[in-house]
Length: 439
Image (cartoon, rainbow, N blue to C red):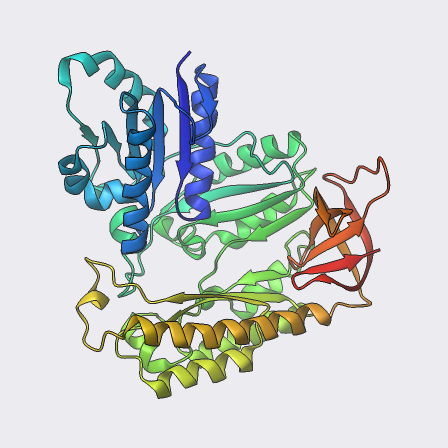
């Protein structure tokens, strides 16, 4: 029985795909081991969203080769799709598999193993992703989390933001068949999972390759599946949040009032340079729309600081806009030049020191907003899905999440097992900066 070590880099989509690949390997009799120990085969699901991600992908591949020089080292995913020439030239990788061949991992791997003695060379199995028209069906049966399952509903992106390489790594929008999604979720529900998170590269485009956005009709059908208590949405494009969209999803109590609307900048001039297809006022109206249909929904976002040409005034516009929206959480990223994108060629590249200064300002602003949002729940009733036990300051607690994705902790009694149960109770205060006390 050959041993396999797997490692994931990047987003929840990559994580989902790695879980499926691990599941496929186990079904074929491969033994899964830690990436830190000697293995017969190492598989790295790579990321290419930034130059740093490229470097981390290369580092993990080199690390695998160092642990066992005689192992088969396999690179799969986005970095393979955009950097296959570099991978082959590097000589570390035995097998490189592109994004649209992940479902064929076992066949490709076993064919390679059978021919390995004859070749002695790296093999690239990369389809031009821009020619891919069909969704690559991969289905998950179980996940490591045991309470929450990520369900991939689409792949690819048609937005072509000026800073982003992903359309070149993932290709155009390809939507998964509704019947395949429903079948997977029914199976997940049968395994006892209470919550699903819909994920993809651009889930707001679900169905558009077939003629129209089909996200809301899909949600209605998922809402009917017995055993699933919560449906959480992954990152949404602000433009999808119309009055009709908010009204329809608010009719489904299983849909969590937690919405990640990617912003990137609060300056209209910067948004235009980024090739984002909205302005700050349209974004604000999307948030206001959600707040008309939900009481205190959790609104989270991504912000890039130090985009090429971002002036101090444009940065201050972003800072002011963030305060105006009042987010629950913000993910702040310093702009990272990505070869192959238009932004990499733009004038006005900022220094790392200046990007760091601006990032620190927004991160502190984010901490204040996050604390204020959580504090607003003190004394309120919430439902918490309990996920795991943790020891905090020498005390045993059950840790879980409310529907708004607020982390909560309940002091546990001996033998109390709350795992994968949903309990209604009251938030009484803070246990830690990002964990609320529940009773």
